[in-house]
Image (cartoon, rainbow, N blue to C red; front, top):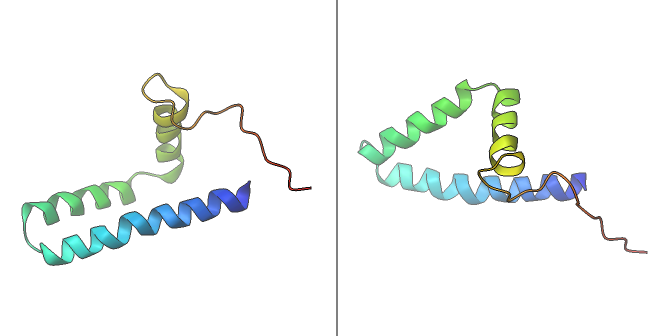
Amino acid sequence: MSISLGMWTFLLTYLISVPLGIAKAVRAGTAFDTVTTFIVLLGYAIPSFVLGVVLLVYFAGGTFAQWFPLRGHRVVELA
């Protein structure tokens, strides 16, 4: 389970950050560059434990979205 989460996180991080970095480099100095820089700096300023709880409530436990349920995950046995 931990390896799976780590690999998905790694993949998702690079699928978002590389295209975003290229887009920011191509559009340097535009409104897009300013807005994305603000969002990235805001993400760095929020403590990880606060951001983690907010994301859990939003994506898993709250009434907003149920994309990642907190219960019911089953691990497939390979034996």
